[in-house]
Length: 283
Ligand SMILES: [Zn+2]
Image (cartoon, rainbow, N blue to C red; front, side, top):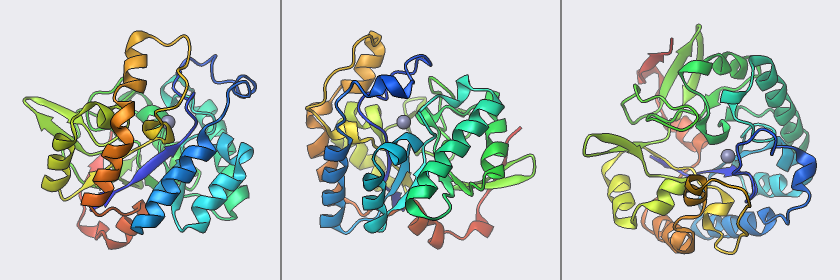
């Protein structure tokens, strides 16, 4: 199963400085979200693909019609936090408030409970496993925040297999759909989304999709937008990660959709025999 998922945020949600994430500041930028999500929805409708959209609560308040379009087309809607603050920089209390605000904003638009979550920049790791308690308390049943390799803001390099699993933390079980990884030489890396998708040649990505029975992709509307402005004040490395390969990304993305069949998380959830899945205890 190859799962197509998107993190729904704007082109400027790439600065992870806590002081940047102030909603009033964002009003000074020209949004490209409407344009890019329209492009994505058209592509998915042409191919008859259902996908999963992890949305910011901020997007639900500011552009509720975008979320309604996802819902109208039959895609899954999950939460990607409220204002894209890293979980690794929040206290449990702050994360709880942020999550509640996000869920309430999205649920107000779609009129039903949100049960899926992905952390901004995969920012859950060993240091903040408490996040899984808070997700469960807030009715999240499916999580897609696990990055099974080293990552700037979290990551689980010790989780070495490429498959959905039942995550057990403090007796709370959550269905986990980790990002898929591949081994290059001795290193385990992620290639199926964001900057990694833009960086690696399509041949490598195609090989990975062909070889593995499970692939979890993650894209952002900005990943396929070569006309987006460049955000000021980013470090060189962040600039590289956010913009490298952007010109070719849309055609690469279209080729991928032409060559492989994708589904949403809820479609995958229905066909997985969860009783046979591995339970991973996080401590
Ligand atoms: Zn994000």
